[in-house]
Amino acid sequence: MPRKALTVLTLVMVIATAAGGAYYLTHGPARPEERVLRAALVGTEECLAKTGDKPAGLGVDLVNMLARMSGYDSVEIRPANMSEAMEALRRGDVQLVLLVSPAQEPLNTSDTLSLVLWDCRKAVVVPEGAQEAVGVAARIGVPAGQPVEAGVKATSLVKGYTDLRAAVEALLNGTLESLVVDLSVARSLAQRYNVTIVQVSGQGNQLRLLLSRDNEILYNRLADALKQLSLSDRWLDLPSTCLRPGGR
Image 1 (tube, rainbow, N blue to C red):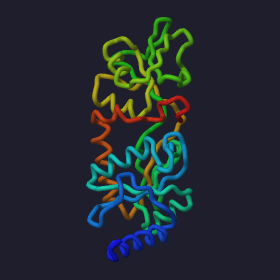
Image 2: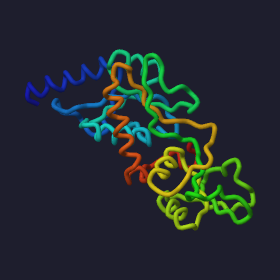
Image 3: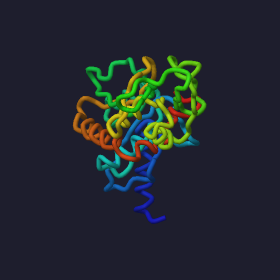
């Protein structure tokens, strides 16, 4: 190996060690001229499911998408516990902390800004102008394998779905009278189609990003990208673990 290449490799190894743990590159090794977004991932909740040696799941997918939309070339993610993650954020070793927290927790603190990537609380969506589906003949779509939501009558006809796009089409053409989805999906549907949110679960988790208050520019950039993404076709294609059996 040429001496110059060996020196660069050694320097990269030293930097990775000094940062307090290994980073997992989600788009391959970064080049010196690349803009890299660094994040700490806290926990192993279903919505942040880890696959093999690399963090993966809905939260990681969203961070990757938003980073690309915000002008970054690659993302580096380091698993950490909460204290390690917050210390890394304070030092500037990472720009983001990705975690799952109850929706009832305050979004922002005196030190951090919080951006909700995905709201896992369940919501009921109906065609605009319709009442919530009730009665013996009610046809309600729910995620396959998920327990029936509270408030759904035992006499209702419950249809499990695995294809969200097909379920939305069934709601729009009248095959279904109501649809149970994650609140983030419900809000997107309400902005894109003639549907209304009529019921929201009071309990549930949210996927969140924490940023330092000193990094408000990045916060605003990511928030704008999230709004664009939630109204795009890719939003309904996200592999949401929140919708799978056993999801939160």
